[in-house]
Image 1 (tube, rainbow, N blue to C red):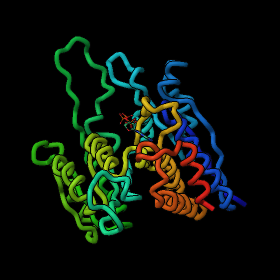
Image 2 (cartoon, protein in one colour):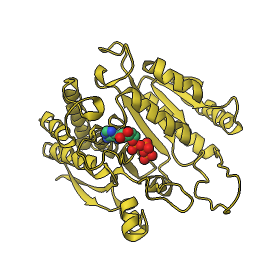
Image 3 (cartoon, rainbow, N blue to C red):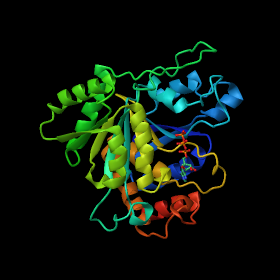
Length: 354
Ligand code: ATP
């Protein structure tokens, strides 16, 4: 008897459907070798395209069905040309995080081949880049983004909200993860200037005492931007609030080859949404050249999170297949300086699964 998992698939906008198609192809390919698990996929229309069709980027009925799935595989959502009257873009992926309370943003950063990084001196295995950014997803500077604003004012404010509950649970997730890795956890904050960040640091220090085997350090966000470029090999797990995590995730993706290389998971108590860290990349959408590796690695994260012996094995097989494909520097999509199409890269990963 196989265990069945229900996966909600949300291609979204721009390159989202293109990279998700490759993620699904790899999922189906790995499934053939896993007799103990089966995946039922249901596709849902969400995002800016859905808004243009039906007036809501994340319809309530769709959200209910997404909630019932065992996991969600998402491409990317939003388009620069489709905005709310306030001028901000539609970001149903952020709505989804908040509505499902997916507070734990997991952003693994791993350099697969030295030729992918713009940094010097990361050849061989001497200085591997392999760390995880844990981003608080539901508070921080995003907390009042949906609060209605009076029109015509000559100022606007956004609030950096850090609650004890929010800080405690995200710090605990980071420490738990560090226990499974190199046992080091770095807090990234701005505690020298912002009282909200001094509070975040206080909570981090309290949680740290629950994990005496994990070493810690505390780095201001501006210094972390520097260290990410100067010595990324020194990082293991870093934990930070929402907007700092948003910005540092893109910088971190840049040092391993770009957005097409960075997978992610947004996790709550019961739900998990897995998606590439990138957006909809409208300028390359429809050209068939987007790098699907971030999505394929997000599929691996999803399988690991489903936490069944079969899915855990599937996650390992996908990661190994990606390692094998990317070990050959000729296997590169355009973002990495190569000529492979999205589909060709997906096919190579499928072939390497065998
Ligand atoms: P969002 O605001 O939705 O997070 P963004 O503004 O960060 O999106 P992205 O869509 O992530 O922008 O694109 C940033 C850059 O990375 C663009 O130059 C884009 O073309 C490139 N990019 C993003 N994803 C990929 C990919 N899978 N393959 C190749 N290039 C990509």
